[in-house]
Image (cartoon, rainbow, N blue to C red; front, side, top):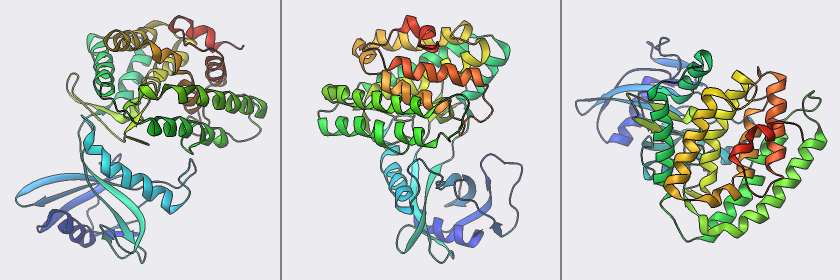
Length: 366
């Protein structure tokens, strides 16, 4: 579809209630390819665009983003609309989260954008935030094999952030039970990931995936007894959703699936990446990434005194392990890394208490 400057200015006028002058717009990850014309031909759903404009004498930058429809429970227009409407309602409630400006929709005739009405595809507009994604730090650490003082400080800052947000509790068992159910059955979670693995792979069998699904269903019933743990969470706290600026100053992006849930969700989402990167570097959890894994966990456990988390983190690690082992998300990963990650997924589910000292044993075939 085409997206014109005139359409953007009309839409932004409806949001800011003042005349708007758009200077340029461009794909977020392609800043050098600035759109200088009046129309952005080939605007792509699922690709975030930066819009630069002036309003009321101030210069502003926002990001306009839609969602792709490629599986993981995003197949229907209503699936995507639901997610974006929810995100707009909760982004601003979480500390350090990028602010949402508006949620709206493209009209069915493709002629414009509006806040709501005869809507077609939905979009969300957020503030633009500068910074570098945290995974860039991990890429550098993997390349050099070296940690500096700032690396450990950032790891601690991320752990401290979870300590803070998880300290907000709520007595509402229905939300915890729902999140436990969605962990297993949601299109973005365990069953959605299992369904995304194509047949005929040389590193995983259908019987393995069935076993994991069955074991995770057992874990759902265990989690249902833990509703007293309901806490404020991010829901997708991984290195591609954290933007660092100078020092330990950061902003988080793309809160997902609910305001309330199990703290282990966030802890697993971040710390699985230290295991993931370490496997690529060392073939096991070792060296600099073992250091980060321990710093994060030890700080979190010390400051929360939440040892019970070790009794509930297993299915969340299984889910995140399925993500990082996925041929869809990581098509160029070496086979032996995938196999060890999938060993980890199956093995952690076998134990009622996660042992931080046994991670490498979980990576070996049972």
